[in-house]
Image (cartoon, rainbow, N blue to C red; front, side, top):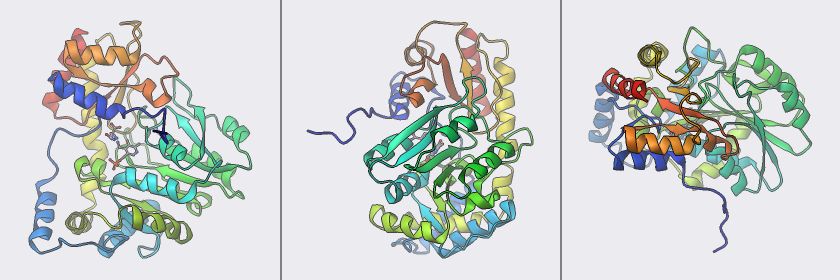
Length: 378
Ligand code: PMP
Ligand code: GLN
């Protein structure tokens, strides 16, 4: 059989979570909370089901949810997006990202991404005949060299994909980064996909740099968000895409045949839940507490680290511990020490021998304590 994606392996998240389950290991690999979503939100979904919201939702999503998203975006970023023509509810961020790429990328289009990169961008680009132009983030700071970006823009460049706060590094883009990007893209036809799924998980009083804050970006940007990250229910696979009318039109041409519409009762519940801003505005301090607890417990371990600035991931460097590849080390830790983490070289096609593992700290304090006990023994 002639594969369309001959070199694409099974996602590392499937591999590590399966191994963690088989080995009965503490799973800090795939990013998901091990605590419950708010009971109030669960009750709202239940109520919507009991009230009969069990048939197809409108194709772009229910209007009240799109309206609530428009309001949240206006309150935070001061930009008003039209809920009717510029916001679409999706089955998580993954379906939104895939749909953006399907709707825009044609054969030989170039898409600039920054590596290490979240694993769904590149195969999606490849599937539609696009060419990924990968730029390495600085290996220490995970920062972007904008001169390098400029030098790699050609007349084939169709899109740039950014992700802040960044998975897997936990770094965030600064206002200066966004201004550089804005200057690069102004007066071009280049599109921007801004993966902002960790928009509310940002620490140390930093402000999330949404593309919505920058006028020359707004007109060309698909902003992607995920309720799974924000409301502790990654299994619900709910998210959305915000983009100007002309781009949303193209997005919906694909969305309607990719999924048509997404889970109706959850949309009804989220529309109501979003009316209380503290439900998302307190997320940064909630996870900052977890980051600080985790790091204080492992500060004397043999791993080295710089505190994560956002996301619920912490990178730990193991170069003082072993010469093994990060993948081999991750597998051995899962089997022998009963703790699972993600080897980050997979976000870089295994090209770089990174000696870094990614640990998810979206866990109860009790799980974090158990994890720290293991990490301190390694
Ligand atoms: N982008 C990034 C950077 C992510 O970390 C994730 C989730 N792990 C996604 C997209 C996909 O989000 P969802 O689960 O809502 O599809
Ligand atoms: N986003 C999650 C992570 O980075 C995993 C999502 C998935 O399993 N596809 O761990």
